Length: 217
Image (cartoon, rainbow, N blue to C red; front, top):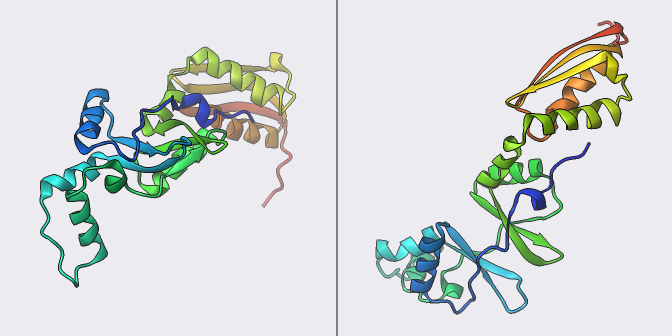
């Protein structure tokens, strides 16, 4: 089944800073472009880390100098609060995803890692950033685009169905399937595959079949 890739929905050419970019400059960049984080890249365009609003906000907390027995987290907070360059402010490692990964994979990674964005890599180079908002773009596809994909990807490419025997209707992302297929297993497969089409919000599978080929319990 064809699925949208991260490269198709990502924000291309993300704004970056160098390891030597100063604190105030980073704050101005985040504010000017209404973004919450910026990657720190080296001379070879490979991301070294990320500076986020949270990294900058530590300075406002004004943490006390850590004692000799202070935990690692307290020491890092104090160092960031007194840092002036991106290389000292950034968080590592960079949470990234490959450009050719599927949108569903990226969604799972965002959820699993509990982050708002993933930076997108292609052959070791930073090419974009994908956020939760970017992933929602799949639900902006038109009903006709979705219907055409269901017809081609599900009923022609996989099931080899007689298109004159079925009707595919899509209304605001809700796909309704009616008509007849040969076997019950094909009806169930059609429903499952339709849910994987980018932009489908819900599937109402009202297909009938001529033969119930499912084993009896």
